[in-house]
Amino acid sequence: MNEDVIPHPSALMLQVARDFARDPVALAAALALALILLAALLAPWISPQNPYNLGELDILDAKLAPGSKGVHGLAFSLGTDDQGRDMLSAILYGLRISLGVGVLSTLAALAMGMAIGLAAGYAGGRADGAIMRLVDLQLSFPSILIALVLLAVLGQGVDKIVIALIAVQWAYYARTVRGSALAEKRKEYVDAARCLAFGPARIVFRHILPNVAPPLIVVATVQVAHAIALEATLSFLGLGVPITSPSLGMLVANGFAHLLSGKYWISFFPGVALLVTLVAVNLVGDRLRDVLNPRLASHYGT
Image 1 (cartoon, rainbow, N blue to C red):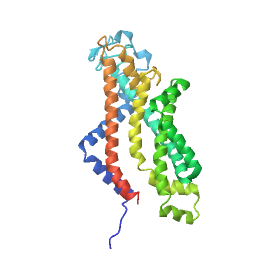
Image 2 (image 1 turned 180 degrees about the vertical axis):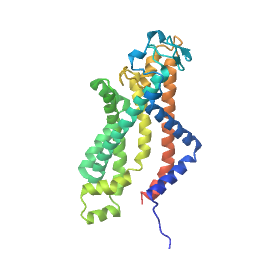
Image 3 (image 1 turned 135 degrees about the vertical axis):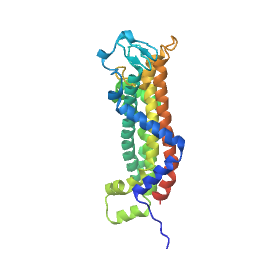
């Protein structure tokens, strides 16, 4: 007799990893992203200089070309900026801020949007209609416009940019989860849970949530890249993180005024680091979408 067997989660994850690794471009992007994350985490230990410690900076080292040596004999492989900061160290520390802001805001927006979407999808009726009208209203405005308005009110700061990015992203997750929750709550396992007198909270968090959460992995991965890019844009415009703790976007903005004088490296290398990070995250997200979607349809959607 043939039976449909749902694989163990560990076996399913192993198969997903194997399918992911079949794409050499995505695998290379994943390895590059892993190295970027590792470099960001180890920045305080592998950086030649602490770019935030004024005691380690010397104005005589300002705007040195890549490969030059400073007045104290320190070699600057990627050159220095207008304050004498080593660009390699500034990029490593900037990666920490850009990735931290992107990941933290995405996780917080994911939690917020998931909770709102589950409530709207399961409750239905007027509550669902009111919530979705709010979601539609927010999604009708460009993300950067919402962020600009919020930061104009809140001011600069890492915490402020995180709040702005959460406000921009949560509606995407709410709409995705709400649609999945509407489909799941009509299935037999939910009816069975109601017959067993399970409360709404248990049904939502113990039964519906596990079935709507996996597709959000792809959405969250892509949104991390979106959050990093938006933070870089806002920092470039002078509304993101402060210059005392610059992200990659702020580093690019800091060197923009020196491009015409030939000091290209102050903007170029942070820009390359930002571009490589965004491309790597997007390639990983695209491959995850291709690998996960068929499996989610067969193992979670039936």
